[in-house]
Image (cartoon, rainbow, N blue to C red; front, top):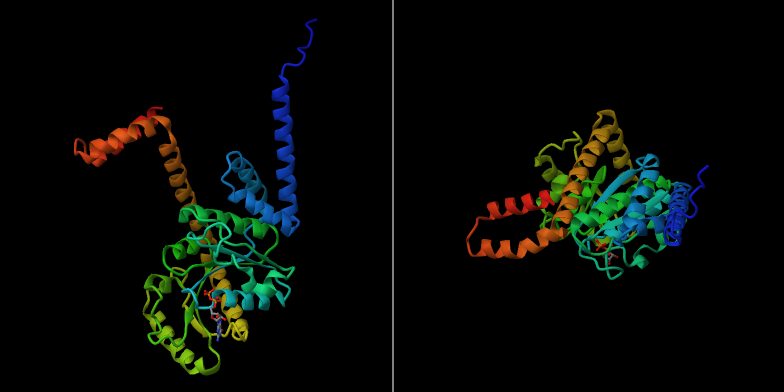
Length: 348
Ligand code: GDP
């Protein structure tokens, strides 16, 4: 009888197998802890999906596969408004309002301009003191700077992790200056815009496109001397909302008064969100919208990954310099050059 082969793997290979098993156990453990609602594990899990280290992406994928079946059960609320409108103050007030009812609230952000840990929105947790110290809250600043698509994708995955950890409301703050609203809109169920009262022209500073996305406009700082102006602003905004095209959800957007500083208007805002949720659950838009978002993100991610594969391929990299020169000196058209490069990419 033939002798069983001994030590078919070198020491190195055995070490690698052991290491990968250890990693597997860690990801498993991490996923389980997230699902059990451990917020420290949740923070580590988000760090893993945000990591750009080679090798981490496989683990991140594994982790997401584990938690996805446990996700989806929250109300995802996007919050936008120009700087100074009171987003942080509002999130603190509204978050605490929800927490007083025993709800678990996660706060995330999309700010592509932020640098790691520096001055980003939510980077400064001191503006959300009570929330930051509440056991029922989880606050996470924006993934550090990068292309908007990447930052937004990671935030969307962080939403799933937070949901798996049992968070019932996910508030996603964004900068209020344009494109990031569209990205946030593509990951939330409800879009809330914070407007400034008493700025003269009430619609000033709010881009039309952003206003059109809003399911609710909160006229913040409706307090003290500002109250009459805030009331007038609310009426102006409510009127303007009627002129916008109908939302695909069939929901008619509303405008309400609030003071984040005095914590007034919070109950009404929660009520609007509940009525909205009921409305879109009844007419089927809630589920359809989430499906549409998944389709959108699949396409967006394929484009991103193809882009990365293409520009990192050695043959393409080598040829690109020459092709650029040919295009600049008008020897070939841009379209022809692009097709040739893609042909090269596909044959390799
Ligand atoms: P953000 O840049 O949109 O996050 O705005 P902040 O939350 O940092 O608020 C900007 C300024 O507005 C701060 O000085 C807040 O204290 C103030 N502020 C926020 N909400 C209110 C409010 O409801 N009433 C009043 N009077 N001031 C507010």
